[in-house]
Length: 84
Image (cartoon, rainbow, N blue to C red; front, side):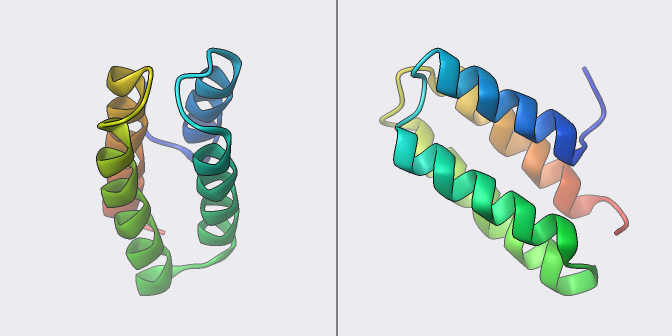
């Protein structure tokens, strides 16, 4: 398994977009939140990433590729746990 990075999360989003594994609006929202979180730091970054991970786990229930969405959500959770 790859270490959690913003690049890895972006790659998972790219894969989901190419495979139509998650709705386009959900992908766009996740990209925007990731970009905002990447420029934030400390508790703000952590909170944004935790909320995004929770939302992605929820979104996985209706996704065409639920397993990949859960993998993305886990990577985002790991990012939230990492030192910023």
